[in-house]
Image 1 (tube, helix red, strand yellow):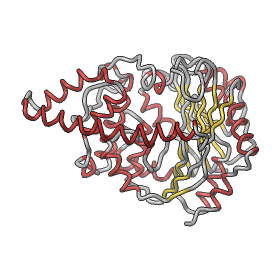
Image 2 (cartoon, helix red, strand yellow):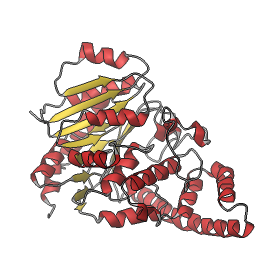
Image 3 (cartoon, helix red, strand yellow):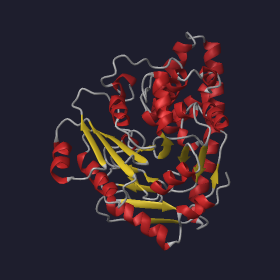
Image 4 (tube, helix red, strand yellow):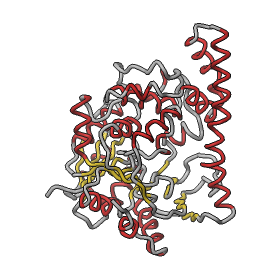
Length: 408
């Protein structure tokens, strides 16, 4: 019988985390799901574990040896999807079991995509090496659950795309868009994208490319303030190494995203710096060009991209300066104008980020206007998933109630 929801994971060399995630999803007593694992590891450790330890027809596993690019790995995973809807997560992430109910509700109400709030429930695996946060010290594991209300909207996708362009085509998760990564999307739209572009996913970042390409074909979207998944971060997560520890090389030619992608062309609008912000922008432009939406690229605010790059890591300044000089052929007047606009963007953009997104949220928590709880000493993703479910049950929070309030 065709499953309703396919959960896909493209993995490479993170066997202990992936095994834990596999066990958590297959622990659910529900035949309406398919779990797809596309493995590109350097060895057969995960393959051997699945062959000897897993006997579950809901699991679809395939091993493809290197060389194989990360994007090829994601595309190969999508080729194995059998479900009506699909959700992509990482090999250190988890799910809220209610995501299956979300897919059922979407199917019954002819909804093409549901985007949850990825900020609500986050899990840090033990020994990530990340800096301490407001919520907890990062030497041990921690599931952090923020307060939420279950409210929903049906956003104007085009309006959110324009806002994203004004933000330098960065931080797409802050905008109300359909999301394959940590969201629920009707699989037929991924097939439409493949028919149009030749692949399900191109670009360098699968989550950004898929979000923007889906935004060009989907209209019927619901965004709900509810945790559908549990984003995770382990010690080898790019979100830790690139976003927090910043231990990677800043040279774009050293980006692992280019591995086995010799044919890839970097967008001329984006500075040649290896950081999250440039990977996001370049992947967004790749999606918009493939979907024939170059009109949106013309609305792109490059100065906000520059500001966001420096706001995240000021050591990128020298490479950014060289990019601006080369772009302006060392014309001092134009360089001066560019830096004036960059200064304005640097002052205006972070004000929104600092005061509304970060400081306001932290003050709300400190003043106990917004609740949060931290759970530690869990033994794998199944324990994390069950802890979230227990929290929801204890506080009488149900996705079913939140969905019933949506007026279509």
